[in-house]
Length: 146
Image 1 (spheres, helix red, strand yellow):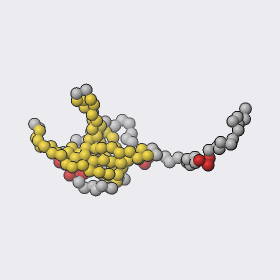
Image 2 (cartoon, rainbow, N blue to C red; image 1 turned 120 degrees about the vertical axis):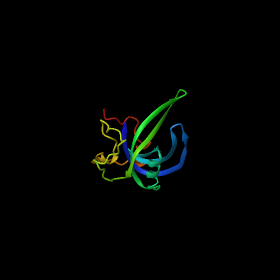
Image 3 (cartoon, rainbow, N blue to C red; image 1 turned 90 degrees about the horizontal axis):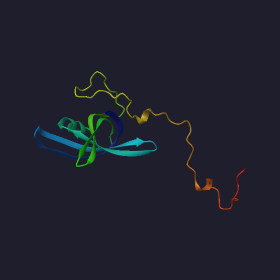
Image 4 (cartoon, rainbow, N blue to C red; image 1 turned 90 degrees about the vertical axis):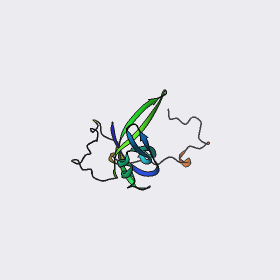
């Protein structure tokens, strides 16, 4: 499953590295803040491999970025763990080059990716009610018209 999300880079964790049976590895996690309806949400993403860690180094906390990622899950001792693994980072609003897709990029999803900027703005949004809008205690107990 391949997804895209635009938001603000809020925090970068330290680079973790080591050696496994397959060789040397490196990863870095970062927090992306993104719009979610009327609120903002945050998610922790993982940049796996030296190439992706170096790509993340190009961006500073506070930068607006677009993250292309895959959602991975795994089970360990009866518990499930989710991992948001990035495969592309770019500045937010940057045009993608369709012919220059990376060789290891997965196929595009059948359904459209979440793009908060593409949602149409409501024509009119009513303001939230205040205490002045609420009926007082002096209103009759049975004020229904029927």
